Amino acid sequence: MSAVRTVIRGGLVVTAADETHADVLIEDGRVVALAATGSSAAASWTDARTIDASQKYVIPGGVDGHTHMEMPFGGTYASDTFETGTRAAAWGGTTTIVDFAIQPRGGALREGLDAWHAKADGQCAIDYGFHMIMSDVNESSLKEMDGLLAEGVSSFKLFTAYPGVFLSDDGQILRAMQQAEHNGGLVMMHAENGLAIDVLVEQALARGETDPRYHGEVRKALLEAEATHRVIKLAQVAGAPVYVVHVSAQEAVEELARARHEGLPVFGETCPQYLFLSTDNLAEPEFEGAKYVCSTPLRPKEHQAALWRGLRTNELQVVSTDHCPFCFSGQKELGRGDFSKIPNGMPGVENRMDLLHQAVVDGHISRRRWIEIACASPARMFGLYPKKGTIAPGTDADIVIYDPHAEQTISAETHHMNVDYSAYEGKRIVGRVETVLSRGELVVSEREFMGRAGHGAYLARSATQYLN
Picture 1 (cartoon, rainbow, N blue to C red):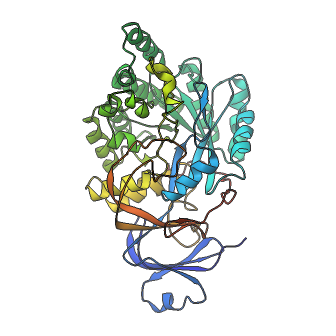
Picture 2 (picture 1 turned 90 degrees about the vertical axis):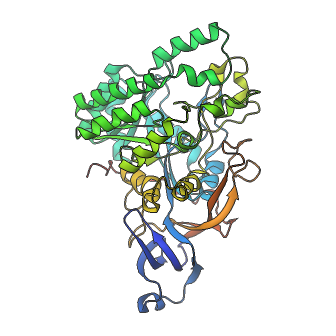
Picture 3 (picture 1 turned 120 degrees about the vertical axis):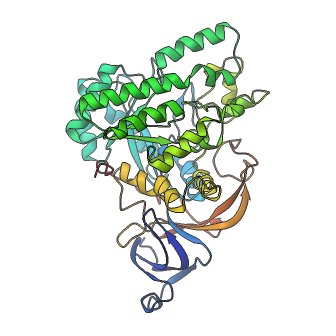
């Protein structure tokens, strides 16, 4: 179905590059033109559905480059399906996700990709792509990387964590990076020293330290920094770029900054939970801290300043969510009496754009930097720009009308994620998504959901554009 001709009038169009009072003309799912509000050009756009954006921001739909819908973990599954998770993303102003397909250990990359297509295709309310988690780096899977790139899977995630499940040794990581240097892929790294962490977990449990707060204590910041340093050096040996996911520790930011100051193609993301939450949450009584168990873990509050500084100085380029929700009841509770059995992951795909706008209100970042780290940079990093991540003639009409003055209180009672708690319960914020278009179609209209499963299209991505 071709989208209706639409004009968005009277808003402040905010992109990573500029801010301008302009009307936006949309035809056939794409932005056709922008013209100054009140100009003769804008006035000539008639015979179109009109959306009034007066006193509002008109921003690109968010691009969340790190989600885990329906992900298996620790004997259970992330509670959001591709249908519920992408619907919640749309409510929060995100119009593109890049999720992680998982290679089964001992199986082929293709097997994992096919399994994730089977979960997602026909179910998504917004557009989606895939990264590939390489659980088993060998000659066969290295060769497969080239074929996946040809069909738009251009990034590959490896782990220095989770021995026996996802961990790759340094030799495997180096081989994957060498292959990426050859084929133009981007290696993404979960950087924690998993072998050392397992020793500390075993020792903590032996001492009777079983509560959720010990999850943060054993996954030490120094072990995140060590692994970050190591994967940067391996990438340097391979001559390849590297993207470090969910950076949470000041010491890890310093490793990224040092490498970037040397001119290396090293990139990093952080997530809202590390910017707004801390080990104080992990220490909440009555097992409530389990709600905040994720890896890398939440850090003491003093780490937040380094993350915000990294975002302002572009030592960190992207804010994604690592959305991987598990219900407190029946899922997080699997770890009562043993923090190591708490499923690792938190909900957040619906909250990212709002929380980052609150960061604008609070003076941590500028409006344009908000759009850069939430829309434009992830689109560029993962080969989707300028189709996604900006508003300009020829781009997909993924557009959010955002009310910067509305106030809301985040709560599980009102969110749309399929999880029984909110990590930000009771947090009052300024700003709210009002209307969302995906390829010119209304998905959310004045706080009413209009979308449908199956509207979302699979996105074949090019190589990273962030090097250009």
